[in-house]
Image (cartoon, rainbow, N blue to C red; front, side, top):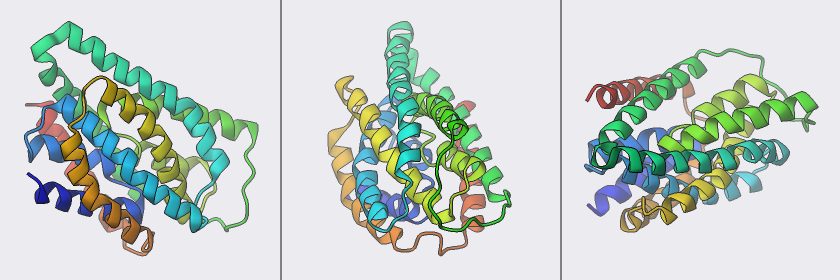
Length: 257
């Protein structure tokens, strides 16, 4: 379980670098269903790994001019404390359910993946006029929407690892006049900040396999660097439909197991 993890990391890194989608939504179920991880351990490992490789991707997208930094700040203002609350809820569930926590966490993850899959499919069929690339100044309403969305998405991410590339990307696409490249770049930049907060919280709670995190990063770091060069050049609709169906299937399997 070494090179297989690195290959998985490479594929996830390529996908996230190109589209901003699929990191936590795919990695956690892969760790659970393919590598037989305990669900809580898979969530923590995925989040800390995501913090590492998305930091590299965020730096690259920032250099390419694909990041709306002020919007990312307002998202993080809500999502970071909410993600810590999500991790805290996991610790409460540990005390309540003990050995049965894995079954409870599996069902929670399954529901989150079903919602994530539905979000991918919804995002696929959203049509809007492509905005230009001029600087976009946030209004008070924009800040409020970003903060509120950050709270909701951050809590779900801290609890399940799902959300940084699904919920936030969909919100950016629907609510803000950003180009497709800036949706991807801003999403990854914000995710890097959010995932470090949640990842360190999971690490302190002993919910992380550091060896697996390292092997995943060996593949995902070059993957996201390569993928960022191809941002939005691939047929995103086909990718989103495929991902949405995969997430729905994985979510239904976990939720009904």
